[in-house]
Length: 387
Image (cartoon, rainbow, N blue to C red; front, side, top):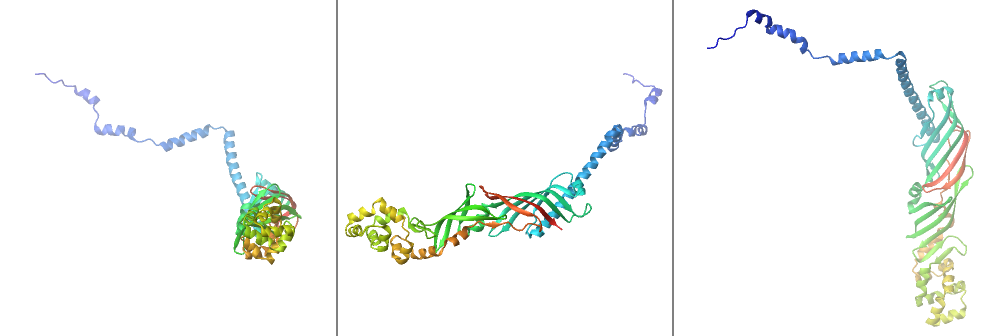
């Protein structure tokens, strides 16, 4: 049997550590590190390492940030005050958009002068129409008031801008009778659609020539007005030979192909006289189908009949309209629709609303028709806002 090896007592005493001694001695190693305190120490050490010039630069940048923020706040305050003043003076339903250009604003305010100020006013009422947008940019604007906080108004030496009369707005406002407007060329607007006349929808066509009217207005000269009654007839208001009630080619072809209706038409002396057909030829046509086809089938007869104004003849002989399929009541409604009345329905004329201030002037410059509407250039000066 093997004898157990014994360790000397003094060796064990030197190496032995009690539990309490071990626990107390290792406690410092078990305490978790304070990262926040370490981070503060690192930041202090980094800042301490920065040069004085760099610290000064950081301070300047922070100060500039606060100044820029204050400058922008001052701009917003001034823009809002100007917008409210313009709304009040022009009696608008909503405040316009005001934009003050240039930076910094506070130096301009201290100098009592703004280099550029832009105002945009949407939906401005102008007679029968609404201007989609009126925008103006004023230059060399002098600020009224005293101090940096008191702004009572502004005065502009010069201004330029533009007015847009939108076709979309015109179609919505003037298109109750389903008439739409579109641009054609530089100064022409086409009106196309339908109008209710005596219970019938007739197709309307008209051209409006746009031109400047004085210094603050736009006029429209309406011409080439015509009302189409299906494919049967065309009515043009007026007393000239080309105006009045005229049968279409389709209506004339239909009339001449039906012998009984053609004879009824030739039986009216006023029609024969207007066509210039000799009495002998008329008598032969009334007594012979062959002669009737020979007379009414010639290009000259068709052209003369299409070019004849039947308005007075139809008024005296309403049965003529019935023979070509027209309602006599429609004729009465068309004759009541005078040229001035129709032109007024399609008129796009307007005048600029009164602008803020009693001084200064605004003049209309170039007028052009574009795809989206009628655009007018403006110029002016000596305009004031507020007191």
